[in-house]
Image 1: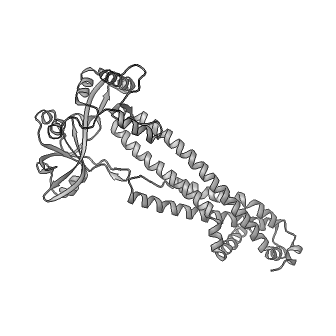
Image 2 (image 1 turned 180 degrees about the vertical axis):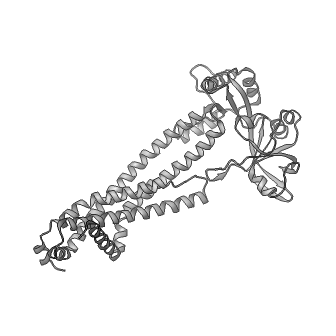
Image 3 (image 1 turned 135 degrees about the vertical axis):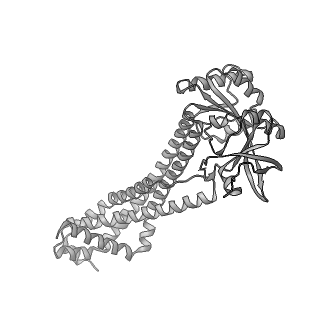
Length: 413
């Protein structure tokens, strides 16, 4: 008998054995299923967040930085975030003007603020639209490019004009087959002329990033006042000056707020690298925690598989005796039981992968949390399950291979 035929026979016997005791096989696999589901789910969350961070970084560009009220935390700390929200004052127009006048290492500095409002056109209304008041240079600084028409200009801003640049979602909802330029949309009850439509940005956290409307900052302040929350976006001269420009902006803002040396800043300044670094630290903690949980589940699942396989060896002692009496070698018996334990664990891995995929689907549909199941995670999860089954199946398979055929035949069927 060739090795190929022997392997195929062992696989057929293993599949028959698993089908004969489906319930026992499922209960045996609970640990493996949970381990694989946890591994793939965590990797899916990290993958989804990586995509979100990449999109955010692309908005900043290689030489961009942001000044925000609440800084990006290096590690997840809800208590500290709440404290900063209570302590940190809003950024102001006066602070923006001071930075713009005194920052020497930045080529440009823009400002934006937003609130969620309703936008209507021709009796159709979309609620919770991010209406942003922006300076004319925000498009260049944050890489928001018009797909149709133009962006807001300095003249629009100075004259407080009621003009708007729409996100792609609004364009598709209001003007699916009509040129939107020159049309009038109603933002929070006020008419605005559409002068442009931004290129599609995609989604993040399962939510579209194209449900927005940009209007001139001065128009926004005229309607809603200038004491609402805002952020500043800066563009350094070049890559070499990025961190110096960021530091300069921080020191200037600290000076305007009369912060003492050694006193924590009550605002945040971050670059794309800082954002990625912070996220890497967070994912490192998540990954290490997941490895611990997965390891426990895998060991528990492996021990259960080993115990079940030992019970299977005892149940099939007579069968093993018959096979050996007709010429089966110890290696054939060893191979059969190793294949059976690996197949058992692999089935658990596949079930866990299916459960993780279903979880990711439901999370994407029902929550804003991004989950993207990477194929590598599925391969890794199922492969690790098979390896666990193979490792913990060695001892039962060895015991089966070492059985004396005469003693095995004497056992009861």
